[in-house]
Every structure is written in C-alpha cells, then in structure tokens.
Amino acid sequence: MTLQQERHVLVVYPHPDDEAFSVAGVIRMHRNMSVPVTYACLTLGEMGRNLGNPPIATRESLPEIRRKELIAACAAMGIEDLRMMGLRDKTVEFEEDEKMVQLVTNLIDELNPSLIYTFLPGFAVHPDHEATAKAVIEAVRRMAPEKRPRILACAFANDTIEKNGEPDVIVDIRSVKNDKIKALQAHASQTAWMMQETAKRVDDGEVMSDSWLNVERFYTFTFND
Image (cartoon, rainbow, N blue to C red):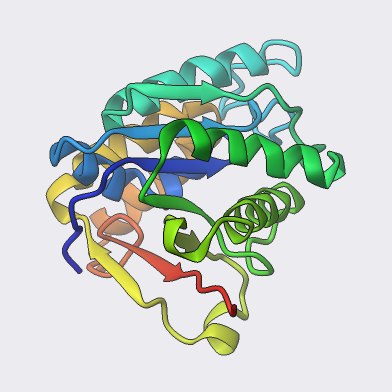
C-alpha cells in the first residue's frame, strides 16, 4: 500500500519502543512526505524487564535512560513533536477510564489529526497496550462520524489473524528500513539482544523479506454506528 498525504498523524502508545516496533517505518515515510507527526508516549517504560545486556541500567536509572532512548528514536523517525504524557508504566490499566479518554480527546482537539496509529483492542497482549487502545477508540467513537480520524491499529496476539483475518493495510518499508533499524537500536536497553539475534539470522542466510523490518501491518478500525 502507498501512504496517502495526511493532514496530521497522531501516534499513541504507552511505552518507549512500542513505536519503533510498530510504526517506525511508516512514520519515517510520513515525515518524508512533510506530514506533521505527534507522538504521545504515555509512560517512560520505567518498569521494563530489561536493564541492558550486559546491564547498562539500574531500576533507579532506567527511566532517564529510556527517556533519552525515546528522544533518539524519535530523531531517527523524524518526529519533532514528542509528548511524554507522564503516566506510570504498568499502571495505565488502572487509570480512570474517563481520564484516559479525555487525555486522547485533548490531543485530538488540539492537533486535528486525519490519522491515528495505536493498538488493536483485544489483540494488544499487554494490559497497558489494551488500556491505551481502549481510550483511543472511545475518544474517536464520541466524535461525529464525519469528523473522525482514521485509526490504523497494530496487533500482536497469537490469535489475531484467526479472529480478524490478515491485516488490510500492509506497507513496504524497505526504502526506510535503515531508519527503522536506527529507531530500534536507539532503545538499546530493551532491544540490543534482539537486534543481535536478528543480525545473526540474516548472517546465517535466513530469508526475511516479509519480516517486521521490511513491512508494517495494520488493521483499519471501523465503528459500527
């Protein structure tokens, strides 16, 4: 699929590195088209399990390390408007529903995006992912249908394709693959081991033409009203 020109793109995810795995390629492509992009990252991922391999962080230093990693990843993607929303990692699911919806509504009212990237409710695996998706969907649902931005949602649950079919939006990101890799590498405390393993698989001759480094996949969320 070829990306269309957008008025403004809003990205809403709970953790630093969610964006690198999910949308780094398409965001770089939007930015190459001079589309303004705002990334609302709800937490600093301060409860992340990885402290680096070998360790480069302590539990106390990890929030600041991940903040700097997030800034570096956004630079790789060309994002100039990064919003760190100040919620706490692994507690997003416990925030009041209305508070979460209002957070997203405020962003939409300010930015007037034509497209939002987030997770697919019910298929995002992590409780913080699910809470984020729920808030985005509800905020957009409350809008007049003719004013709603499109929502492209990522999904990672094992039964995603079984229950939803194949994603309807598949974007070839090979032209910006290096930028996606840079965004992933920026989150070194969380991704260094994985990037090393991926490089080894390539060196061993494994064909990865349809991997998440070459294509990004999304479901278009539709409202039944």
